[in-house]
Length: 188
Image (cartoon, rainbow, N blue to C red; front, side, top):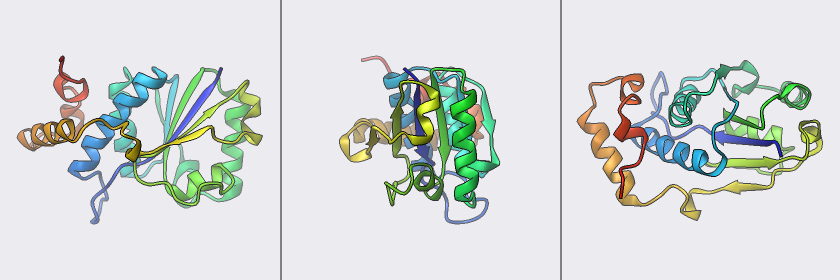
């Protein structure tokens, strides 16, 4: 059964170059862990080219055992309805893996699902479960994964990751993601 997940990028800084803020990085780690636990490793992750989406996608890729990460302009904020429909048609025709994960922006998510969801918060994920990829153009999402449903773990875990991030504040994101204790949960 093919699965498509579409995540809105995590929280970002309000100043250029609009990369993820510390809380956004931590929440991307936590959401990536949950996506990996719920759906496994995607065959491909496809991201908008904007920095906040690329960083969210990089974090998800690190946690999901580094599937191929593709950057696609059709997922950028300015993508028209026609552009998004073309991407949807292409996925329906060519998706070869059982699981594809997209990381994009609110306007694109609304266009992708025909405006059924008028607002998706940072880090929330739409899930499509399909019989066949060719069903995607007419499919409706099966659900929306909210932060409020508790899938992002506890505040204790978030606080622990924020503290770890502050301790490694001189590291760039790529180096930080190499730290096993950052991307993988600590054993009980």
